Length: 325
Image 1: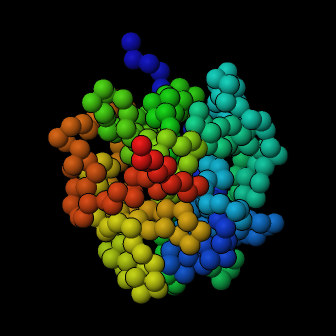
Image 2: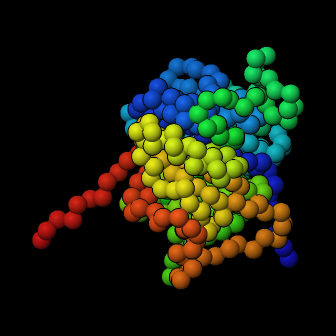
Image 3: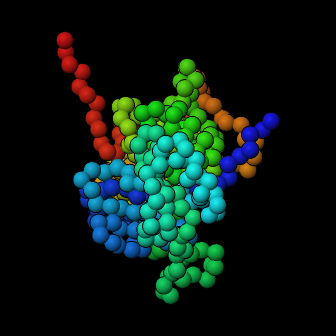
């Protein structure tokens, strides 16, 4: 008998990143990625892309180290929220309720098995554009910005984990995520997995932490929809002194066109040039990459990823030097 799917989580709603250089980080997301500041409060700046329907999808908070503050999921209903809270508490990963934050109502906070802080909520504030930012395109929340190369919406987040399989199982069992693609080691354990609750190939990805650390962030990703924009933003980055880590290129996994860059605060940002492919099949069979197929999984075309790509995450940790005997 087919297991009844859990349809209680709608999608990734927003992410909070820590930055020791908040204003430089805000300038990057504004001047390069064309995002706008929706609100400032305390040590946090709330930002949005022009096709994000919620009040904000990115929070940048001042902190001594870069890294993930939290990620937030939206439930599909108030009843769905209560069901997921019960499931999370039963598994022992709950933290507790908060009254809300800028842009959303009451939220239940919890942590992944690896220690990533997360929350889930139902009530949200939809963005209301001021008169000068309204557009006659009625299905778009605000007009397209005329600065930077504007990203359109939040796409996904990629988390590093010490125990990949344990974290993947948590998202499946507690939240109803489906594993769309995975890269397997010789013993069939997960090296990496791409999971979603939507039609996207992934809302969340989990990668094994090459340094054996816990609770780190690999990257956040925003979406363009047009591969040409990756070339356009590459010009902006290079001419303004930013170092592109990798891309433009195309992954085999997800089939998406990508570019990676580290923002001034130290967090890696991926930019998607297109949606890759989308999944509509309710009986989708997980695509598994292993052995000789791995080369095409990581890079379909474009230059190979540098070794630092597999080791760098935030907070930044370094390999322990090997002592000579």
